[in-house]
Image (cartoon, rainbow, N blue to C red):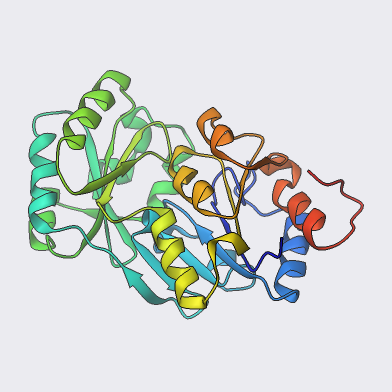
Length: 280
């Protein structure tokens, strides 16, 4: 089947365990683009958290961000699609988690904002050590998060609750699911990500394909996490990385090698051209 667009999750998919793109995967994506295939990143990250080698347009044509809340054309960073959360929905989510010890971050116009104490030291919240460098590099600190949220209540694209406590996370998840009109997912074990009920990576990809005149059957998607499932199901060819969550592997049409073993490159080579790297 002819592939006209490939959409790739970032963490655990396009990016290896060092948060880089391997030379072989770069070469393969270059080959795909030379063949006229459109490339898209589809991530839970906001635009401000994307690496420069994604933003510069050398690998990727479009960025689907915040789990599908926005689409940006690269490298100009022109937003061509957005779905914001109604203010009353945001207030209902905050009320649902009131009194519970979880910090929050919020996505507005491609930027992520978080409380100052979380910004300074995420590991104080029992998060992985790598977050102590990742959060300050990709977030903006806010003094007085409640006031900040109210001041920007009509501009919010996504709201994420953050806690490493499993029992607390499940309680928050149960409460936020009772709020009507929201989409909820998790791109990491300590996140509960919420957005407009119309949002998902699949819905954003559907919009992008319609804009480009590309049917779902001519798309291939790659992912590894729970928040990639809808996108994997939507595509004509949904590909799970070997390091994927079991639920994603069950939903996928194919399984390729891991993100550390050039899984995307192996699929591209098997689809477009012979290569010294074996196919899936």
